[in-house]
Image 1 (cartoon, helix red, strand yellow):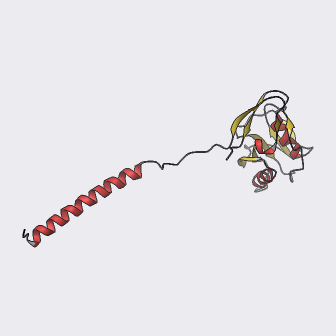
Image 2: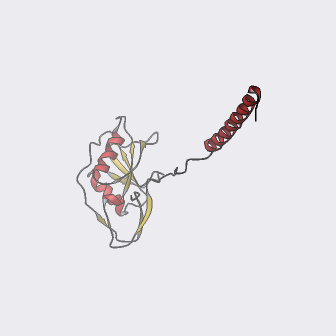
Image 3: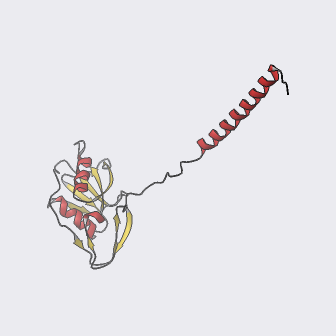
Length: 170
């Protein structure tokens, strides 16, 4: 078969155009689909404990809010909690108008063993305040007079059934 140069060129261009069309179509479809492994991980999961169980730092997630004008106080404090074995929740500034001189824990149940464990690490000047905040885990608010965590209890005992927010396990 003896094809002229013009016919060979047209056939080559048609094949290349078809390949380009297929490539663009495949690329557009791939661009619009989500990544296969994109999942969101939660910072903590509800864990139900029964009387007699013990709550230790690896079972507790802590969120720290800064109620002072000291930059980085919340980040440093959550890092200290992590160094002591607690799971990291979120970090941020306390809501506008919040006044905390030393440290507070915002919790609706002051008898919660996770709250008691965290409170033992904040020192004798920390207060547990009945206040709701939607952060994960035990919510700690630090003020300008707060310096550092203290050596507190290694664990607390559960006296009645309770649900705490625990970090994810690997």
